[in-house]
Image (tube, rainbow over all chains, first blue to last red; front, top):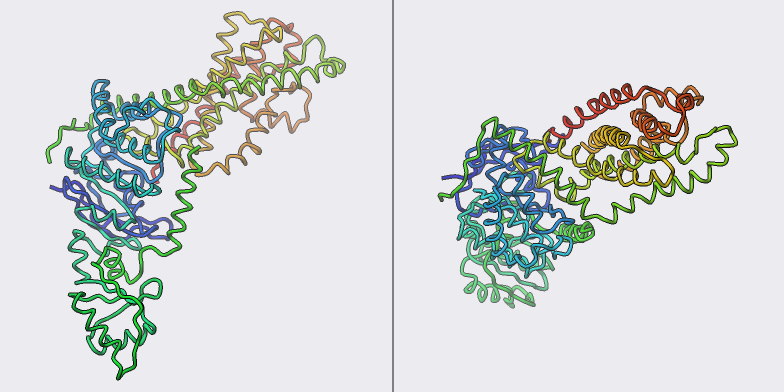
Length: 331
Length: 277
């Protein structure tokens, strides 16, 4: 059973190709993650799947309904949590929910039942009569999750659900989402550019420059990197790289902060060998300042698949500006 | 995984019901927000009071000397101030969808199973209701100015204000339909709304003005709102022959013009707003 089926979906903005011929399927009941840098086409994809944008070409079935032709049916059967806050902050939490219930045609009984249960789950029952303006960022997100689920959607779409939240709140939101899936079996489709977050997903599609470059479980994706990652800092990285290439035939790449990154199987055994090669007196001693061994992350997968890092400093800064703006917009 | 879900329906009646309910929700939200915003409710009395009692009182003697006759300038201005209140409230309510689009609630509405047409119509209803309320608050000033109104006059005034409100909210939505930022709105404000307001004859009679101004005022939808409001509110105070010099068209003609402008604004507004990107 698939909740979402996407075939050869394309979206242009003028001459720009935001989404370039992507195809994928999302199984019912799973958490499916769309991982990629800002501007990769994540939000454009989610907007097409939720009928906010019209695809330039290709098809997408959501709950079996065509996003191009059966918009009302698609909308009735999905819930959406937006990247930016979409609550009316002059209204109370409950009023925000009430309007949602009205838009989706919930009966009064249905509404109060469902609202009470969900508010309880996210621990907002006590604050429901307060104006949203007084809510913290985390509370707003929780209320939006409740709102997105109020009409019993089969699929919940989440566009960067934890962007701009502090790590503790982020963890909290994830606890709710995971509980939710266990209790209600809702399919979740989410976009993110946080690697740690993508780890929670059952399947991840890695998207870069409008194309899906990899799609699998987090474990399988990480297995593509193969073995372990060694990060070393030496006196002369170029020389060290050359020497390791000659002695063991391993490829190295440059990491941040002048690090040398080596992908290899059994890193624990490779380190002593590496040390003896690098400190070999006959070839001249390369002094090694630090060595660090770790398991591969999705970041490594991303680099392997695209040839570039996902988050440069620039993107991090932009992110800070965004969350700052969000606070400012908080009126 | 099996889930209890009412199967959404494609049925025409269902669709109609859903959209009426959707429009009602949008309207209801505007009303709840307005009720909550007591400050706005009363601060909106500020401008009318300033215009009537400072501007109006200041110009009154000069107007009389220049041969304004028996009509008090404050009383002359009153329908203009009523128009001002309704006009700006309507346009601002409608333009709030630009704000909503970027920072909030509109996105929630856009993914709901409600058509854009219903959303736009709900917004027209909401903006119009709010500006009618504001107009009614200003109407409370009438006795202070010595403009005593009968029940039938009040009913007519309410009808006219509703028409003016619907026309201007539709124009507001037309302006806001494709706009992505508030910056463009200030341009609109300075180059469309203010000229519209001043050319409407709200603060001076349009008899005897230069030809270009007279012609522009004919094209100005607001003209057809001020004129009947003035005729109805001053009907008991101003003798018919004097009324003739300060009014332009028969009330029914004005009403028809407002209705035509409303349709003229509303159709492209709904169309532009409803177009999916």
